[in-house]
Image (cartoon, rainbow, N blue to C red; front, side):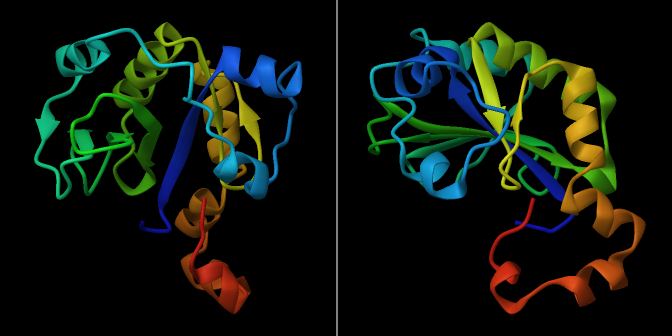
Length: 166
């Protein structure tokens, strides 16, 4: 994923409450990426129809992945456990800061709130899906640092950080 994109990984509120009691302000990458947040907390049937009412679906390169919006820009990715797409494994909202769309962020947040989710960022921050809170998280992100100072941001990265951004 491009360094100028900011990702929100959706986590069902019920799953956070079951696993951690309440939503922390930070969550380590180890916990965030290795906890099956959607297991036992699947979205309502046909939730994809609601996304399709807001954003057009784009072709996917995998049977176990659906994409709405523009894959190379502002988009929503829904990853499923299998190619049959019965069980959600991950939902990610990708915000392209080189083509920022207030409308996309606003509509994506409203849709994600309908799912009763909060979001995790790769910097470890837990974010409520409120437009203003998401904007504040974006302002603190590496993606925004890159947009403001591309050369300085790239020079500051450690070799292992080239694999992860956010």
